[in-house]
Length: 243
Image (cartoon, rainbow, N blue to C red):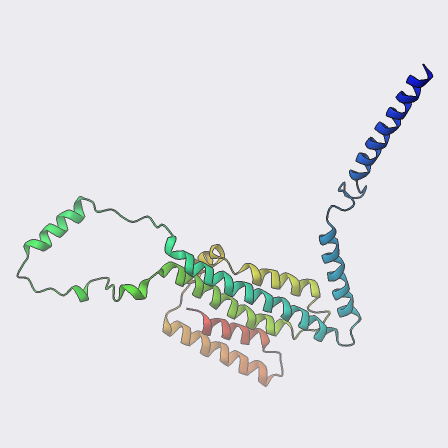
């Protein structure tokens, strides 16, 4: 009987040990409900970021330290965006666009055209001249790529002006939010939205020239009065780079 009891208690002890070890593997962090080792890489990344921010806060020239970090982030975004655009252009050949199928009117028109054998006509002077088909390869992808590049080029001009601000005027958080917005501009969805907006708001060449001339007069007036012309210059740059 004692032998059986001894075996029972030994088995019970082993069972409790196994359960205890299993429980240790599932110990939760009370603050977030996650396992203690759930996000070790994320914790290191957060620690590295906090260390970099601390360096900026403690720098003798905080504006220069801030600008260096922000420029590094923008450079990384540019490298990733170049790769994204190249991939988009290469894969755009597989895009499936819905084409209008020949309907009865198409057939009727082609028949009528074929019946007019002796009429003078020039296929190169059509209402919508096509030109060289090879040059129009993937026109949508090319338009989106150019929109991304143009938008980001204008954004870099604005960022350059903003980084001239003091540490108090242009905080690290605001600068990082701007970089996040800048990086988010490298997407086909953003480009499509921006392309549609710029198309509907496009100025004629005359309107563009008048707008630039007016802004340059305003800039000169501010300069004569000794006032900051940065915001006006940003508007001039934006108009010049716009459609």
